[in-house]
Image (cartoon, rainbow, N blue to C red):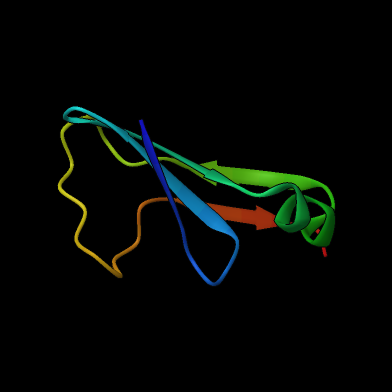
Length: 59
């Protein structure tokens, strides 16, 4: 598995043709309480620098 990080503390883990998105512990601490997460639809093609998910918090 390959995990790649952005400068904004997000990560993308690639295993074959499956990708998992997430945020680092630091990002979680900075965000506080997460109130909304929008994940990409299955099969969505994500380009380098493009949005893979949306996370909203109360902070």
